[in-house]
Amino acid sequence: MYKHVGTKLKAFAEIWCVLGVLGSIAAGALLYLVKKPPMALQYCIAIAVGGIIVSILSSWGIYALGDIHAKLERLEDKLIPKPNYMSYLETNQPLRGQCEICGKTTDLINAKIVDNLGTRYRKVCRECFAANGCEEK
Ligand SMILES: [Zn+2]
Image 1 (tube, rainbow, N blue to C red):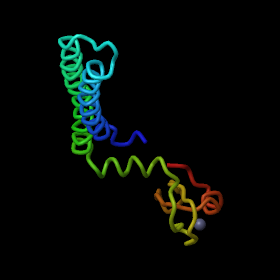
Image 2 (image 1 turned 45 degrees about the vertical axis):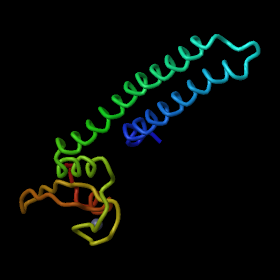
Image 3 (image 1 turned 30 degrees about the vertical axis):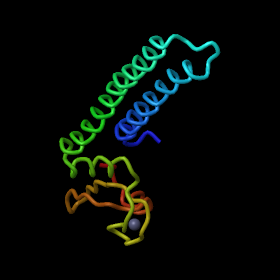
């Protein structure tokens, strides 16, 4: 619902402007043509013109806000390097794949294995992690 809200805000600003302009013209016309007794013509024109100006000016503010958000989103897309972003996502999600010791496909743990062969880093399943006395990396 709030994803890419800048683009939505820009569309809303355009709708807001069109409805505001039409509404102002309608209000001015109705006050003069339908109301009994009719309001003075200069007031009706002032209401219509004033409403149009307020609608256009306020739509600029809404549009500008949406435009800033949309451009900021594009900039953020360019500035945050994709590989870093992907590894950020990976470290915050459970690692899944094939255990590098038993080959079972399951949730994996980044393990540090220290034994008489030296220090190795492997992605292992929970059982192999426990069985080999691994440390979490
Ligand atoms: Zn395993």
